[in-house]
Length: 458
Image 1: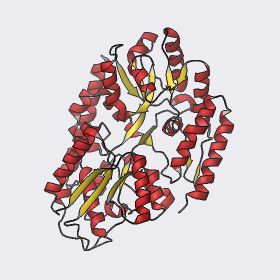
Image 2: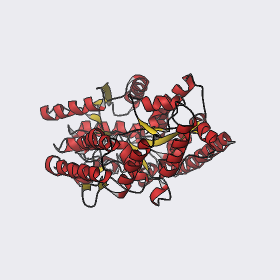
Image 3: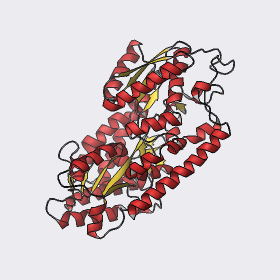
Image 4: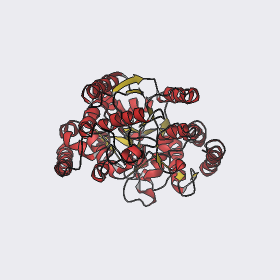
């Protein structure tokens, strides 16, 4: 019955989105990139700019099957775009590898035309005035999007690259997204007498402790200590880690203190442990040892494969919202994240050519194609109309997709990289070692704001 309810809900969602998509398309609101004019516009900041014949060097991080699929999509764009634009996609290593290469390229003046970048990395590039404000393209009457097209994007994704540190400049554009979710062993919950995932950390703790006590070798949860988990737990409880009105980090809010105090207490009770090795928490969940695992929705295929291959045998599982109800929140707020693509400053012609490729990749058909390869969420709601079969075949992905209505994002601030390291390597480890939570987070907040104000201002 549970499987039937999930499938029915998925199909209903897909049908609703399909109707919305068809209404927009029939109303003439959506314009395919290849149907845009081939002659330059005569108005606005892009007046007279002709992208014809440009070569776009694209630095990305996609490995393996994703790189193969991306290359195929690039080849399709190159063969069919009416401007004769050629995109040259190049895997430049990890996100950090690309960040270091971009810093060097900014210094040398030899830049790619399109580059993958997290929001805080793009902000770091813009400290050197290296990026184009993509609002120019998004809002252009000829090359951009209509109001209806802009509304088709999940707004949490669409607004994520608008950077408050630089007066609302759009320093990137989202090709895809993922989110922080709780992976749940449903058979394990049923064994303990529960029929649904926890909605509060209190319930989470009760379930974790019951599971740990139920048999030797079991553990409720292995604690993640990275910055995205801290943000996710804070968002879920109704808080934030950055105060945008006052332009400062706030890691010492009631919500963050509550979440990390809970983790310290859960560890002390023996109902959680530390992650012993990379992916140890994911592997222990897949092997039926841990009741819960918290991680990115982009890991769904890896978890599914590991469960299928586990010596312990397969079990029923799903993904659910980060617990949220402890401090009065009535609905989940999910941490969504993912790198965007930014357009470095080169020439107006090459910049527009890069945008046209980004615009094409953002169309529903290409988005649906990319979902099937990457398991990332599409950035446009209308893409769901082409994914009904994928939702049905991947109910955990569908369950995560349901959570996209209410989201927040980590701060797109240039200093966030060193702040993330301080969270992961200093503050959270100290808390798990028994340090006072409030004073530790007070110190983290002071450090984060000091480096933000002294080292990362335009």
